[in-house]
Structures are given as C-alpha cells and as structure tokens.
Image (cartoon, rainbow, N blue to C red; front, side, top):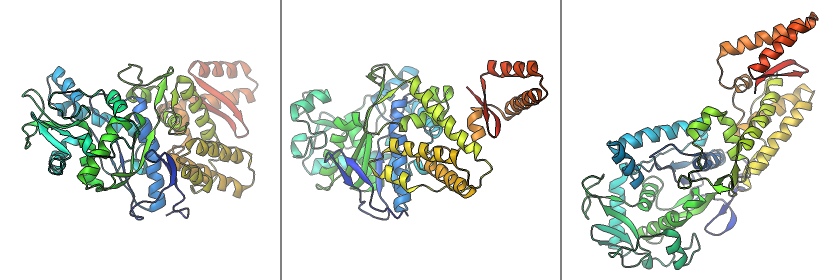
Length: 463
C-alpha cells in the first residue's frame, strides 16, 4: 500500500468539484464502469473509458491494497434484437461473438491484469435481481405498472436532475422520451416492457418481457458492489439520461441511500471535429485499428489528453504516439545491459493523484527517459531505468521487450534476417565496399526498415 494514502483527488460530476477520495471501506474501494452493448465491434471512442478508468483501477489497487471493480456487459437491448432478427439467430449468437471481440480488443489495448475489472456481470444473468428491484420500487410508490410496462415515476424523486443539473423541460428534450398514453408523466422512464413472441423475453409479475436499459446497471451494481458504491464512471454522453436514471431508481430502491459517492465522466473522442458516434457514422473500430497500428501506440494516444477533456483523434496523433514510444523503447534498448527493478516514481503517483492527470504523467516519463539517455554513472542509469519501467507500469506502457516493440509484430526469423543484413552492411563499410553497403541500405529502406547510428552501433526499426 502506498505511503501517499488519501492523497488521491478526483473530479466529482455530482458536486462539480475536485474532492479528496476516501472509500467507504478503506480496505477495499468499489467501482462500477458502464461497459459495452455487444451487438457490433466497439469503436476507439468506446475504449477511452476502459483505458483511463483501468489506470484508476490499478492506482486504487496499489493505494488501498484491494478493489472491487465491475464493468458490465449489456447483452439484451433493442439493437441486439434487431441484429439477431436480421440474421435469424438467437441473441446469444450475436452477444457471445461481440463480447468475446470486446475482451480481445481491450486486452490488445492493455486493459488487462491490474487494469481490468474483477467482475464482468452480464445483464441476462441478472433478471431476478432486476425484477426484485422493480418490485421494491412499485411497493415504495416510485414505480407503477401500466399496459404490460413498468415505469419509474420521476415526480416521486425530489432529487431527479441533480447529477446532470438539468431542469424538467431540458431533460425531456434531451431524453427524446416517448410520450406514451400509459405514462402518468412524460418524463417517466421504462423499467420493464413487454416482449412479443418474436423478441427475447423473461417471465415476470407483469408478463413476459425484458428490462429497460437503466435498471440493468442499477441491479448489477447492487448485486456485486452493494447499495452504495464509491465510484461510478462512464462516458460523459451517459450522464443523461442513463446515469441520472440510475441515481433515481437506485436511491429510491435503497430508501434514499446514496447510489454512487463519486461520479467520473470521460470526454468524447472527436474525429474531423465531430463527436465519434455510430449514429453519425464517423467511427474507427478498435478491431481494425489494432491490426493497422501498434496497440500500445493507441493506448498512449488515449492517455495523451486529460480524461475529462475531448480528444481529437487522427492519424497524426497515432503517428506522434508511435514516434514517442520509439524514443522511449530506444532508451530502454540502450539500457539493455543495465539490471534494474521497476519502481513507480513518486512524481508519477502525484500526477495520477491529481484527478488522473495522465498528460503530466507522460511528460514525467519523457523527462525520466531524457535523464537516462544522458546518464553515465552505472548506479544512476540503473535507478533511472527502474523509474522508467515503473512509470510505464503505472500507465500500462513500456512493458514489452524493446526488440519486440521495434519488430512491430514481425516474426523472429525475419528479425534475424534483417539483423544479418545490418551486420553485413557494417562489415562492408569497414572493408570500404561502399557499393555493397549502399545496396543493403537501399534494400532495407525499400522494406520499410530505418537505420539509425548510435554510440552502441547501428540500430534498426520498422517504419
């Protein structure tokens, strides 16, 4: 456990302030992050939350020694139903495929190990908990049944709107709610809805049906983390109506007990100046990006801006991230003869304590690497290498062997062939056979291999 216990401060959307973080249980904080709706491959904007809040998860585990972190899978939804209907398959065929793809994509981006959730609850596995919560809401007068539906009565909760701080008219406009004849109030939202024979459905006291989106997260958070959780996180686009409705139904189901003590929201990714969204059509899928670019560079790019701010995504951002990692891995390669133990520097912990200031942490990594490149004393080089590895460890970076990074996923046989050509070129230059040396250089350049003269000899990397 870190000596900087209780120094972590986080911006709380609920209070609109940065506040010192202290969990209800000092031995084990709790965190819930809204996960994907698994009907297609996720886009890179969907990955920002898992990457950033994964860094927070790792920090909490270091700081408090333990963490209960849940990130859900929404595997029942009208979009899933439509995709299954179009293909003529059960919804599980769709959801199993894309849930597996999501896990694979997140692992490629380094959202694994200390950065991964402990629990991945699926909505379809929690129908009894959802039905039980809805029943409590009806019994306490906060929900009502009408024409096979069950709706939450927003007028029954005085705190409705406290998270998003919108007035009733603005909330109605923003939610695009259906003003159905069975609603007592236009703002009332669905907890349960009937399913026709051609749609997935579960038996309930109100007939065969399926849950509304919002009740799913409330029931899963309660089931795995308790009535009150320390941190609830997700994209800023979920703040209303999803998170606002979670607050209302959870607090009413728990006799007014707070649902989440801290609300954290990551900013959106923009592409060409517009918010990246499936509805807009300007998306870049993680599944394709990790094939086209080094996944660690994508992770670096996602951490390059403060998490609450928008992030403009571009090829230039990815290329800059690759070049930065080239320099950092080049530093580690030059320190290959140095034995060092990874130690997370206090300066990195301080940056992350400041509301997850990942840009400051990345700047600190660059500073440490710069010092390491200039160091000549053996002890100093070992200390700086350990700090560089530890700083990377805190952010999920720089954990590959440098040669693996520069190989860009190529086979070991190809690496050996290239090194053989580099060695042959060096021998040709030594023997003043400049024609042969130039021919090898041109051959390697044509293959996208860049040569770099260093004090340790000629290094190569793939462009």
